[in-house]
Amino acid sequence: MSSRFDGLLAGPAASVTEAGAAPATSSSGPGAGPASPAAGGGHARLGELDLLRFLAALAVVVFHYMAASKSLWGVQPTRIFPSVAPLSVLGILGVELFFVISGFVILMSVMGRTAGEFAVSRVTRLFPAYWFSVLAIFLLYTLTDVQGFRPNLSPTDYVVNLTMVQQGLGVGHASGVYWSLWVELRFYVMMAVFALIGITVRRVLIFMAAWLMAAAYVGNLDAPALEMILLPHHAPYFVAGMGFYLIYRYGSSLITWALVAGAYVFALREATERVAGRVKMVGAKDFPAPEWAVMLAVTVIFGVVALVALHRLGWLRWRGLVTLGALTYPLYLLHQTVSAVLIPAFEERINAWLVVGMTVGVSLILSYLVWRFIEKPAQRLLKPRLTASLRALRDLSAKVSESPPKQDQTPQRGYIHTVSVPELIGRDGRGTV
Image (cartoon, rainbow, N blue to C red; front, side, top):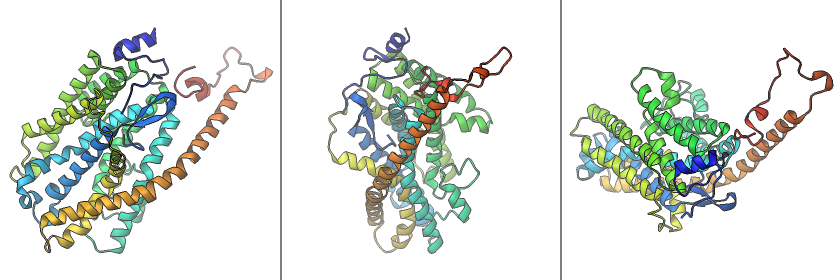
């Protein structure tokens, strides 16, 4: 009954079990890269998502270099690059595209996995490059007199930054771009808890609807604790991405598209309010981002991911897209720090366009080196060890839960019997017993 109901909600292509497993459709996130479940439990990359992730990172780079880094240029960058200002200011929404892609990729990653397996995949993907970036920023501002974006943190604050939860602990970010990682991390925790409960298509749809409604309500309250949990200003992007993944994997359905449409309307409001805040702070002349342009940009974001969901971009199969997707994360982490060094050093010596081109080029080269010599080796080192540790912990929990009670320990009336977590959630960790 449950499986048939899941299939009804997901669309004609769905055939899922209560544990959430399903055959994958033919296929072409911030994870090791966009991947889709394939037969036998393998993963096949989605080149179109690799490309979109890279374009999102590039949009953020352009925004920071050509629209937002007044402290580096000495004047508002849009005055230096007026011909592209209407486009460069919209690069601020590159992060919103990241969030939509993340909703797609993270749901794809967590379905069919236990919470522990999902956690291992996230840790091995996120932390090696992140740790390197924190260390590089610490050394840069400790050993040099570079002033651009100087965080003015204590050594202890840098250590706290290594956890990625520094904002939750009231410590400043070592880099301004880290704010979005705090958002992503809370979404990952939410999905890990969901995996612990047990993910099915029906539950995903209910979760999406409930999250949207709760986020819309909490967004109008002064409730910091609820805001930290429910991410009211970012929920519509993650929900939309989740909906697009359901469409991609199981086919179109009215319910799924209705939830995506609701997320789109919610996202229009959030995006226009965020950009309006920047316009108010900087001024419309120096930040030419009219409301209609923001709405158009959000529409394009939803439109291109919808094309992915509908398998309309499956022809993008260039092998170089894998490398571009791999560069995205280190590029996002490091580009602002690179600009803090290069733009002030060269902005008065050579043409501004050349300065931007050089800074982008150095950022891409550094990102490749970090991916090749930091991320990949660290992932090869960490993943098998974390997986083995998880397996050992699971085996130990299974042995404890399977140990029969001694004769004199049989629960009697009025006796409180303690139930272990594996007994409560099922031995496979997905809420199935």
